[in-house]
Length: 71
Image 1: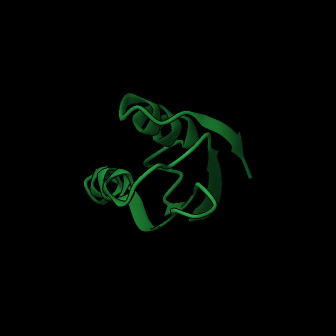
Image 2: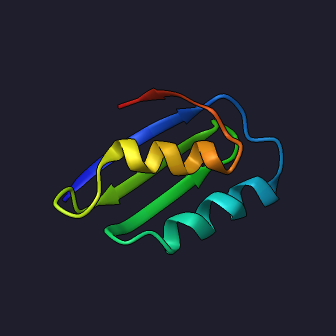
């Protein structure tokens, strides 16, 4: 299990948070998540044998949100 924090360019509304949370909920290998509206960050815990952080970033991008950093 690994936890990564992704910095997004911007989150503009609560429905943006809901879109990202919905995607993470349906993503195999994701065990926990927190989307922080005020700081535009997404913290995700996931099973690295099932999922790569690059896949999570790509899925966030597909929703229309740009990932600008990762910790």
